[in-house]
Length: 46
Image (cartoon, rainbow, N blue to C red; front, top):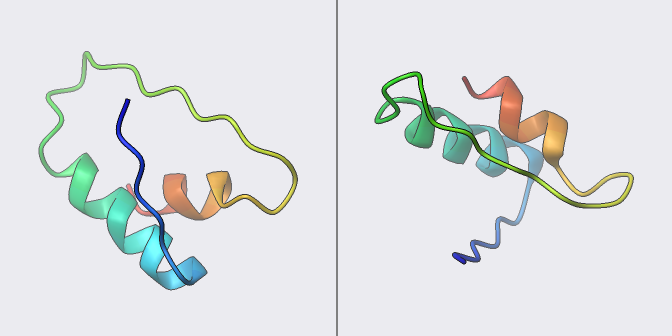
């Protein structure tokens, strides 16, 4: 398991974008977290 901590919604979105740029399209990413954890911000970075 990899743990990455971001400090803002913008930083979380940029992380999502960076990760999306190296995915091939067959991978699966599971995200867990409560309300406000940043799941939507992460996926917005596609």
